Length: 287
Image (cartoon, rainbow, N blue to C red; front, side):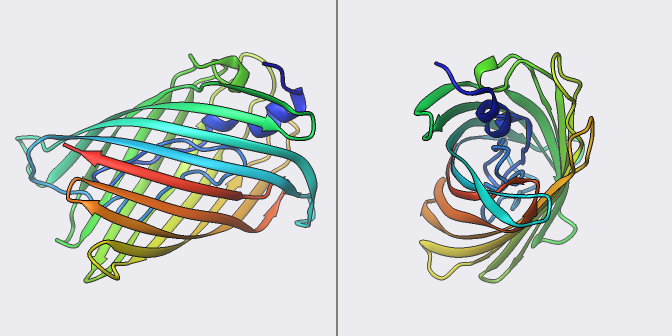
């Protein structure tokens, strides 16, 4: 299907930014108009040590509706009326090495699916984005805390219609989590290093930080808030850009081995990028 070159470049560089490992769960990538790892929810990094091996399947979905953009002066102006839907299917295998039961390890593979619709030109496109694979490692400095890191490689074999198959990317982060009775704080500090493209300009490095604060109101419901920040360096004539984003959501602890989290994100401040305006859903199932 056809799509304007401007819409494609601006809104479907989707898969090259983001990734995170999860608490009993998750990882993924996200759209250019969304801060990297903006999909994370409470307990994202509430990870165990000294456990028997287990597996997790996670499905993420992010719907970004772009109607306004931040200009170079930090003011919101009208932009292309474009919707981007990114779905991430992730498999994770967790284990503890026999040599050190105080360390946790995980291997993950993530497959992104992308759909883009330009409501002005009434055109759309879709396809499979570049898959990601990598590892995470962590330990618990205290029983209620987790500290670790993850590192992923994005492989350029996806559909070119959605920005795939163009370059290798390296994505990593420091991950942290703390539990205080009914309160959970989880977050990360990460960097995305884009590789050299086959065609076009090489984007600058991306630095980001994500924070989630949840309160376990009942056995079923955990409301949460979030504050994210991302900055991309200027490179190849492309300007630097940044955005600060707030999130509001609720996590449902449906069963012992599954959960659903939903949150909305809105840009608070930014420069030279689309305004974040998206709905995020995360489903986790472990066995």
